Length: 374
Image (cartoon, rainbow, N blue to C red; front, side, top):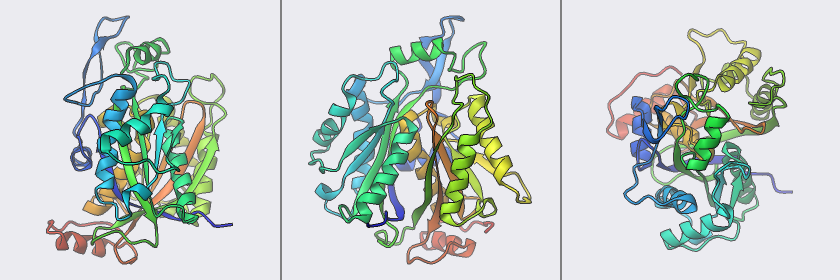
């Protein structure tokens, strides 16, 4: 049996409330620019407007048409740097869970065909949607590793697209007290967007001199006390998932420089991340293990957050503001699914990541030299 390939992320495409491309969105994340604004919906109890992240589209559709309009530019941005023939690149796209209130009807039957039509490209027969919120793109990474390991594809687009801004979805979130709103501080800001990654095998070097980013130790688990369940919560699901990830990668928390996750503003997610770190990180650190969360700046991106997490990590490696050579990423869904993986800078030419290498690569790119801690 062919083993799944170790993946390397070589490009990203983003459409978010803070930018209509990967470069724009990631520069805004790096600078801490927020795309959260007043929405055209009011909180029923207070009458005050809800806030969230809306993409500034020139032509805004609704339902599946809106999601196709968000996804197509992100996928196109990735395909613009693909070295494989475009008709040979499958698209694996995470979408919202089928139980989501306000989810467009027949979304998974219609979405990819509409995006292919917008991009004027044929669909690879292995292209698919994975309706599992943030877990969808995580499962897409696993499937992409299998496709590449079995040589059914050389490169794969792993993507996600979502919007929490439909009337029905917002009403349900307000009724369930999930949104950050007047009188309710334990909630998240709704958002929308799309993210796409171009992945290839780790031994297939990226074009040019730009570094790639390895994805290692992908592991999945389940939390038996998910948000809203009312069951006693100890963070066991994420803890065991992160432990499995470290074991698969042959690493420990001492090798992790920082975390980048899908925590959204709800106390549950921050508590879960804290419990996992407290149980597994026995390292004496000069400063706390940093926790990055893009949702702070974009609003909750749902199924799109996993590609955004990975794109931001790669950008941090490439531009030299990463706290170190490895980051722990973890995401989950409301049903209790959990995924964790480790991302690692991979310089062109397969040399190990070092602070000196990264600084020199920036000099070669015409960027000012910065100082890093290895």
